[in-house]
Length: 360
Image (cartoon, rainbow, N blue to C red; front, side, top):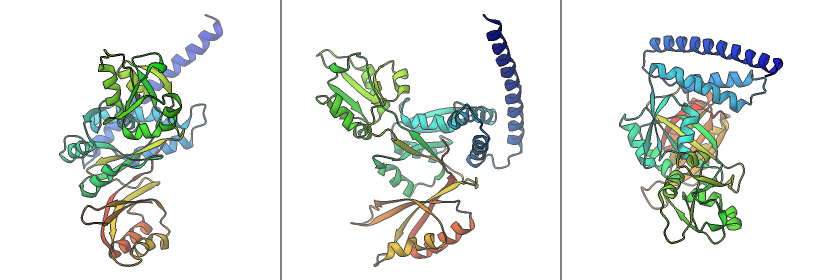
């Protein structure tokens, strides 16, 4: 080993020891703060968002802002676990993008509660069997997840946060030769997101939709082929690791910017963070111009609408509810005023929650 290399490694060792002392000092302070909390709420999305935004603003590199967020989410997660290990419900099995979203938001210092359906995620949190739930709500190429929207309409849970996760699909198999693949399994949305790639690279392969990408990977792992049938799954790199599958191709999604948005569900409201969103659901009165009249207060009070999605209400034929995301916290003066006027004009209006805008 050269003297110069040893010098650099010695400097890194010294920095690591200093970092360890600082992280433990932070953990002690976090534990002291926890002992002062009177409401028993451990997870404070607004505070964590403020910490991450401040660190990104002061980040001079060479680490990216995304890397900084990842590192400090891990620090906050493990400090939080000194007070209590949070339990997080998500759509399973392990290896789904829902699990990746949960890991991105909550880090490793949490208990994973794997659910078989999105409905089960809601029920698990509602019953107090999990502290929080993570559910997909929309994809940048495939649109809204209808089931999630329907369940939000009736749940007592609050939206506590949002997570945006870039989705990069891989083709996984026990085989090593992509030319031999005759069947491809995945979630229906993933099959749609990789439609053109499959047409070009596996035009003769049969495509079959299953409940989740990770379940498809698990199927391939457990599959015993005796008739010369060779199958593959579209899933994540993590699924390949979990189920010991070969990655035949990476980044096979048709849209390189393919992103899924997830919501964090909990039982409590979230305080303002300084950069927030509010999600609401409402119905308009049955009269001409009702929808324009309903949204007019938002425009007049300068409240920006970032999402508008209609869904059948299931209460009557051609009867719809409208899911709306707006910028700002429901306690902000202009948002409070605008929503008060919307309530007067709506047949029904429910605030689903205010929460920090997603951080990379």
